[in-house]
Image (cartoon, rainbow over all chains, first blue to last red; front, side, top):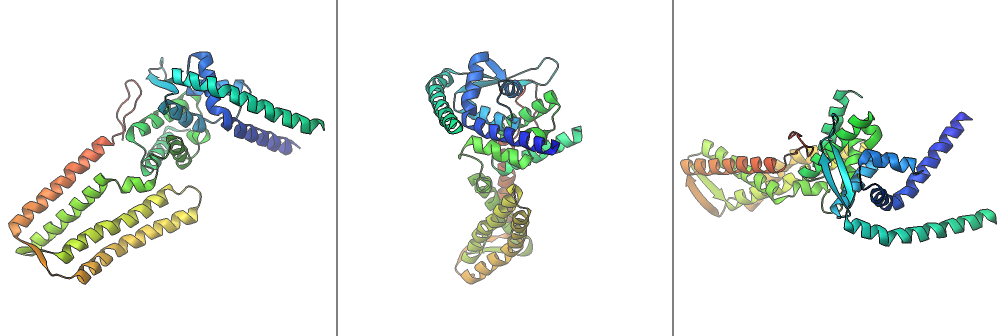
Length: 123
Length: 213
């Protein structure tokens, strides 16, 4: 029984990770818009706290660097206080524009998907 | 996680990124990100980032098509030029030691070009073996293919040289001239190699970070 619950929980997180991949770049832009700036580890934590779990650093860091090379975020290494240096990411004007343009499209898509699922579940 | 296993991960990740022709500045960034994350969270690098091969493939996927194919690491003009200079230098030096008068024939020239071209095959196969992530059997076959073609390459190049033949003679030069030319070629190899190594040096981007491998 416990094994079944663990497997179900794992599959559920895997499923959510798959869903998250489709919106991860927009979610990261949104989190940066909210906080002003952030670094990789706290973004992983904030995604988790926002109910978007299962994001591995091995997926997030390369994505952050792609956003950086596309000019949607800018990055800067800064010395840590007593710890390792941290790479901070900030949203650029271009990133803000992409969020403003693509965010509503995703919201509409997610609402449509939710409506389809709800109709199916209620029928 | 021990410091030794973190170091091993770092080395294997560096190798995997090098094999995929990721630029040195990006490698420095990726290594610093892994180090920082692991130091801050205490997570193991494999747990957080996947195996070095998997993570290198992921980094390349996000970098786009401009980098990342093992072929590009071998087929760069700089690498091919180093190979050509080294082969010509070695051939001239060997001839200068064994004969008084060094003769360059059409067959000899074609043989050198063929050897250079054929050496690309085992190199590509070796890199393919090093970057194969999923199948141990495929890795083994690529590795054996690299070894096999490496062994066969000098014989095939020699055969091509013989088929083309010793005539016509293109250049004849005395031993001293061949020695000087060999020295120039070999020196050129060293200089070019040093430039490639310096240009591909991985530097830690963190403030106060040291240059590494």
